[in-house]
Each structure stands twice: as C-alpha cells, then as structure tokens.
Length: 226
Figure 1 (cartoon, rainbow, N blue to C red):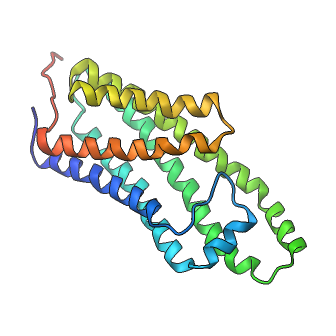
Figure 2 (figure 1 turned 180 degrees about the vertical axis):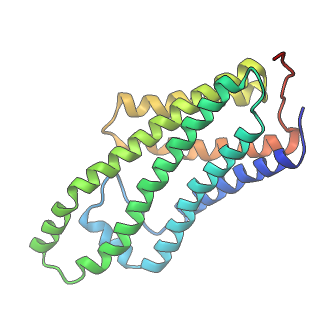
C-alpha cells in the first residue's frame, strides 16, 4: 500500500471537491433546470449576489474534482493497470470539465439575464428567451455528454480498481456501478432531467468515499513486470 503526501493530497482534493460541489448546490437559493426559463431570472434576481457566489463555489467543485482526478492519475501510472486507469481517468476529466463549462454558462446567463430582463413586458421576455433557445440547447447537450463521458470513465476506472485491487472491492464496485448508472440513465431516458438528479448526490458521496479511503488507507499499487 502506498500512503504518503501524494495520496494525502489526492484524498483531500476529493473531499474538497465533494464539499464545494454539494454545499454550492445545497446553499443556492435557486436551481436552474435543464434549460433556462423566464421564471429563473425572477428567482435569481431575489438574491442575485448570493446566488452568484453559491454558483461559483459549485463550479469550483467541478474544477477541484478535475484536480483530484489529475492527482489520482499521477499516482497510478504503473504497469499494467495504467492501460485502463489512464483512459478511465481521462474520460472522467473530459466529462467533468464539460460539466464545468455548461454550469459556467448557466452561471453567466443567469446573472446576466436578471439585468437584461428587468422591466421587460411579457412579450419582450418571450422574445428574449426564444433568442437564447439555441444556446440553451447546446448547453443541455454539453450537460448530457459530460455525464456520459464521466460515466464511461468511471466504468473503466471501477474495472481497474477491481481487477488490480487498487482500492477495496466495495469501492471498486461502487465506482463501476456509478459509471453505468450515470451513463445508462442519459442514454436510456435522455429527456427526463428529474430522474438524473439523485446521481449528482451519489457522485458527491463517491468523491467523499474516495477521499476518505485514500487518506486512511492510501492506494494499493501492485508490482508488475515490465
């Protein structure tokens, strides 16, 4: 088992990512759904600066998750498991930053839209929403594919965890099942935003478990012949 500064840093990065993601979400006074709608601007405008700061915290959670995955990558580059671990972590990172970019759009347009829609008539408000419809569609696509990319990566990572016993078996299976769940829901029920919501909280739990495990136990890196 490897347990040193590297595993401690990685563990704390996972825990910090979980905290930023979840508290940024939980403390936000308003959550945007699958698309930005006119009522979002009214709700955000009730406490716009507080909403902005909570969203910033949430977005930095995605960024910190990316950091934690890069850190995990740096300590799992040995043979032969790196052939599965590297593409797995790479896909999770791609998915994570895709989600970060999509959330940054909602953050920017949500705050910007409060000022732009102030004092508009109902007809003008409908026109404004129609004008951002295409961008809304692109961002929703980003969110879906970010979840799918992350899911594929977690499946590969979970497989590597189990095959080479890098972490405990239960954590490996948790990672694998979470990956299939994240990927499968989007592919099977692409238009039902509500069904996916619990997966976000499960992912936060996974981050917490990963961080705690690395801090307490480190990571098992089996010796292998070149």
